[in-house]
Image 1 (cartoon, one colour):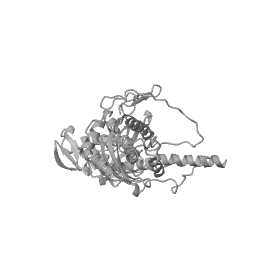
Image 2: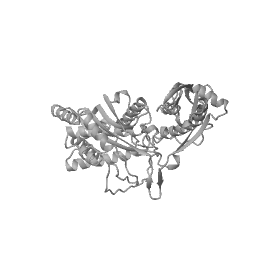
Image 3: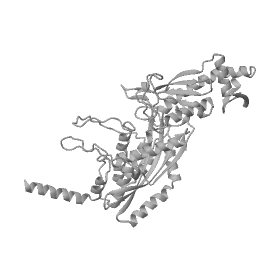
Image 4: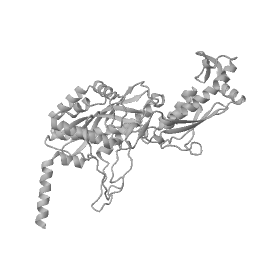
Length: 455
C-alpha cells in the first residue's frame, strides 16, 4: 500500500526468551501482518469492508517507498484481474447467502495483496559467480554458488545454459555447489538465487558463444561473424540453418586452441542503500500479487477448513511454470500454517513446551485448501530478473496472511460483538474463545471469584 502520512514508534525490549531468526520473507510477513491488522481495525471503525480500504490504497507506479525507491507497480493490475477472473461479486454474494442460511457454520473471505522487494538489503551480498566448461564432445558442465534445496534452482540454471548456448538440455550437467569451484558465495536466500546465479551463467555462456562465432565464420568460408547465431544444436547464418552441428563447432574450436571455459561474475547494478539515512534503491525489482481466501468455520467447535485460495501472481515472463506453481503452493500453505497453527508456547518458568512435532503443529496435506487456483500475470516489463522471470521464493508466503483475516471475518459473521485480537496464529482454541467472548469473560470472572474465595 501507499500510505503518505504515518508516524510509528518502535520499542526494543529485552526478554528472558531465546532469540528468533529469519523466517521465509525475512521480516516482510511480520510487517505485512501489522498493516493488515491496522486496515482491519480501521474498517471496523468506519464500517467499511476491509477490501475497500485495501483497494483504494494500493501502490501505484511512481509512489515512493519509505526507503526512497520509486515503485513500478503491478498491484492494481493483479487486484483487478483477480476480481474479474474469479468473479468476486458472485463469491461475495455466495458467502453472504451461506452465512444467512447457516447458524453453526460461517464463511469468511479476505483479500491479501502482496508487494515484495527482491534483493539482499545488504548490498554487498548481491553478487554471484558461475563456471562453465564446454567439453570436446559438446557436453557442458555448469557450477554456481546456488544451493539446490528442492526449490528447482538447478533446473533453472540448466535452462539458462541450454537457452544461451541453444543446445539440448540433456547436454548440460549441473555440478554440486562447492567453494573449491565457486568461491565467496552469497547465501541461497532473499528470493534472489536464480537471478544472481542465473545472470552469472548467462554471462559465462554468452562469452563462450562470442568466442565460437569466429570459428563458425571460418568454417563457412569467412562469412560475417555478426550474422552467425547458434540455434537448436546447429550453427545458423543469416537466419538459415547450416550443416555445422554444435559438436563440430566445439571440436573445431578446441583444435584451434580456443578457450572453451569461462568464469563469470555478476553484481546486481543500480541497487544501493545508505544505512545511515535508511534511503536508497535496495531492490532490483518488486513482485506483486493478490489472493482471495475463503474459509468455513465450525462455530460450535472452533475448527475451520479453507475452501479455496484464488490468486493472481506477478510472474513476469516465467522460465519454468511448473517449478513456479510448486513454489506458490508451498509458500501459501506454509504461510497458512504460520498464521493458524504454528504456535510457540512457553510455560511460566520459560520452558519451551511446543518443542516437538507432537506439540508444535505444522501444516500437512489436511491443511491444504480444497482449491488452489493460480493465475499467471505475465508481464514483459524490463527488469533485472533472469530472462524477465520474477522471483517466486518468498513472496507466496505472504498470501497465507489472508487465512487469519478470513477466519476473523467468519467469527464476526457469527458474532458481530466479537472482537478477536490480532494475535497470530489463529488456532482453533483462539477461534473458540473469540466466538463466545461474553461466555469466556464469565468463565474468567467465575474462576477469579473461586480463587479469591479459596484464599
